[in-house]
Image (cartoon, rainbow, N blue to C red; front, side, top):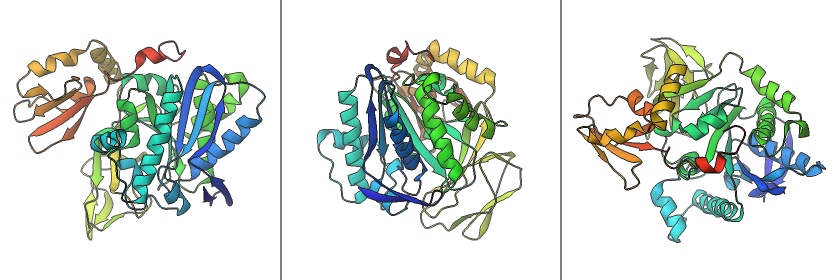
Length: 399
């Protein structure tokens, strides 16, 4: 158990890994909310603590079960993003294999946190029937309207289109080892919600609103059992200008020993112009090469994501990508020169870009693939459509 303080509320609470849980009708869905996987983001933990407390007072019986978990307890107790390693960059295949076969030997506190969190998640998955919904609660270092970060599968798109906030696709293409990528590879509905700036009171209010409407969307509660319209409007009114799906197309990665400083005043979804000075690296200005929107500019000491750039996805592109994936047109790709299957499950390809010169990122996205660069000439591209557990959600109203 740790003592966790909120500057926004001027309040301190005590929390364990399991903030709380509610058991309703066992034939319903299982919702898992995770707050504070970054220790300098207490908003989600405080919101979960509040909502679980309120649910415990309800005299109604919900349909399903809900679990509220704290991510990096020790980092939360010290108000640090992480202590030695970023817990939201540690969910790579080799680590997970060791966690599963007992060969994982933690040598720092963040690895202990990962082991404990993995054990709790595994226990829930074994004990509950599902369908499962995972929600990862975050805040940002800069001012921001609420938004979702969504790994790009049709299953995730179907569920998240219910929310009145912008949906950001493609972050998995730029990050190595986030928790959500691991959960998406298991095939579950899972995505992140960013509620606002770390220490803003509004961020906690947005998290509370998100938790309640998520319970309605997943059918854990119905609209009459909570103040759905109020919570829906809280999020809708703060994001009127920015609706629909957006895509990340550029990331500025901070190198080891680089002295990076974001120029003051930037916030999420802010329009930037070609030639704008965005940041300073080792004393030299970093200038935008195009007109765009800036996303998640870094205003904290820890982390290597300097900033991202995003653009809105046209509806016709979303429609085409859905059609291509449903028709499984990606099965023709290995017949093209320079393209080969990289996995027995046929969900991963290796692409020689010197031969397959037509393989632009946008083309791969249409087919449902997100890429990782191996070297100058080769890409590994992965498709999560095959892993999606569509049958488990097909009876849900949103599906």
